[in-house]
Image (tube, rainbow, N blue to C red):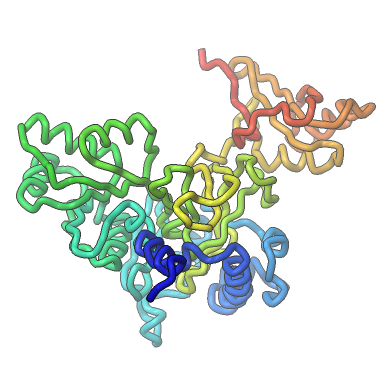
Length: 432
């Protein structure tokens, strides 16, 4: 006879995609850090971009988050630049171990996609390559469900990312793709899918069109949504029409990063990634709870991105998810980290603000505020410091001139007084 604890564990597992979601923090960290060193070694050996960028790095020593933080961050513009420079020899720019003429079947890309830019992304073999099943399961989909998938199947990987995830659960998928709203409504009325997969805004369009056509869609009870903001107002609007929707967060480069659960308290990290939150313009991790750029290391051997900067802002939430999932939670998408501003004809980057602060150990946090009108800009560097160190404002003003080649004023602020919104450069100029 099963003990109450065993029965409880079995019930909880039925609500989770697998046992990885409820393992202890220590067990997960040991597993991730062991995989990290192996992934770095694999990237160095098989992906020429990392052979170069990680030259001289002893992969066996990359066994902690502190060691990981010493590696360079790869940002999307670098990925694009390498791909463009290597189009003739390697369309993936040396970041992937996959291709379409490799000898080993495991090294052959099953599909190639194109995202705006143009950035090319490979898809390797194996089920649920993008690891989306975990998010779709958390949204309530189960084996035997028909899922109406309205992500695009054209050029970009979104449609097939979600389809392969749904297949891993045991769902049947209707590949609806985008557009043709009236036909989408008719298919839903005929086939009676259990749920929708796609952007939340298109789901609203479909439901509005169904109402206009006088067509009821009573089978549609759940949704896995993503690729755009999902405000509570839209979540409640869908709920009032009988559809319970949960969001996922991923990219074409990385696959799933995090997903929403029934607790609706942030997004739980996927089990196949290592996430850091860093100060925009740098690779420096910020304290827990502070908003910064999402940087992800994926454990995917076919596309082994090490410290890939997504350009998205988020923050780590304290504690564990009430659903029993023990992985780290983040707040979700909170804006973009690329805050480059053009001031008096010169570009000012977050990395330059970070360099100014790095020159002065007294500075705890910094924020550059650009104000005035276009062509008559003013820069004010606000810095959090303990007390008012003598001469610091003047030294900072000198650093501003040296780093940006522009003049700026300095304001010394009390610790904790700057907004926790991830902004390193605040553009407060009037466009009039």
